[in-house]
Image: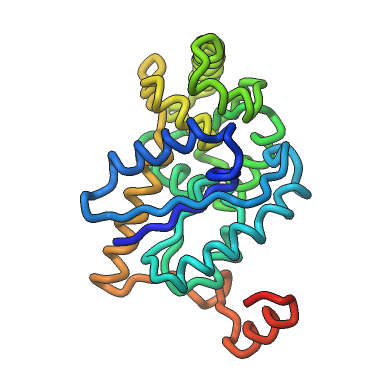
Length: 262
């Protein structure tokens, strides 16, 4: 089984993500089956403050979508998007004939099987607002409680993989946010950023006062394996009736050519 995991970060291009990259690769390999082959891909141009501005996401999505299309052509069995914002979800799912799995969507759905209510915890309130829109889009508002913010940055999280002082500060902030989520009725906590998720994994934060902290990376990898199995064994695939109706091949080819896309 060959899995392509697409990140929204500058993995392989920007050295600030080196420690994060090592963490995700190590932990994805740890939970995957022995015969599962995983390829990671970042974006060539990562826009700062991606998690704060829709325009910057708009500039990033085409890179992710084109990489996903390329992955299918290279023979991968499935594409995963490891950005919790699920950037390019609708476009990729519409275009690819192979399955696709998304970090946020798979985490939210798994959280609903682990508890009645879940809460998002992220590094800043801007990102939480964006994540809440996805919760609503997926029809899960009634399963989500008040989200919580740590008021930190992606750069701080990236640097925390080798800075003990930042580990202590962010860990305490996370636990404080978790206690607030518990007061609001949360039974499952979803770190609403894969970098924050890996921070929790690396520092052994699996629960806070009995509340489960969901490891979204592991859930995404295992969901991907399941989706490939289901496609091979029973032919299960995405519905093409409405939301993810695939464009006509000739029209798609002509449109891509007009935009100078291979």
